Image 1 (spheres, rainbow, N blue to C red):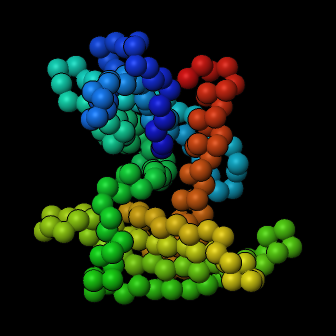
Image 2: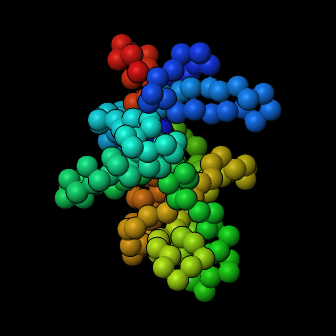
Image 3: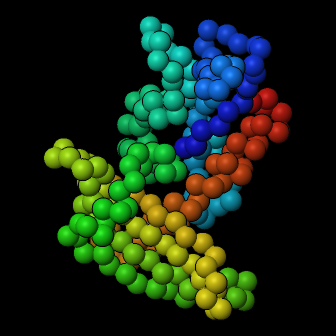
Amino acid sequence: MDGLQYFSSKQIHCKKCNQKRDTETGEVTYSHSAITPAFVSPEYTIALAMAPEFIHLQDGNTKQDCERNAAKRWLTRKGKGLSELGIAVSGDDLYANQPFCEQILENENEVKTFTRTVRIKNKKHLYSYRYTENVPMRDSEDALKVSWLEVVVHDTDGKQLYKNTFITNHILDSDETVVELASAGRARWTIENENNNTLKTKGYHL
């Protein structure tokens, strides 16, 4: 899932608008946003759009809405059905909610590593993976424990082409599982490039 803003104005507004006030000028910007979930897969370049959840002022609440709260509402409605289908929910670092990667160096967990050479369009790329499990999301007794993985891609000249980290509730029981989850995580880009672009520019008027 991913969020996008589809309306913004300094004059036109309604009761449901989110508001952002400029701290220097006091000028208010009104906006509407939504999260736009979609089915994606590393095996396909298409994204199948699902029902959005709009980010706006909730009834009886004076606090500004946000992408994270909208995602929680959407998961409350749709999460059980997705779980029964064995579908994993993927999001960007906003959903991780905590810069816990530094904790890995301080944590006693073993960080496992391995590399794979992959040929893409007649060019060799070196994929380097690191992963560990039971990493706390925050520094507290009740912190959720997650699995963490990192993938870095270099070409044969040693130039870094890609680097990203992911968290998941899946058990990292093998190198193959790590490769599959990293590929699934990388597939999230299709939400922005395919799903959101289609909704904005192909006649859906979002």
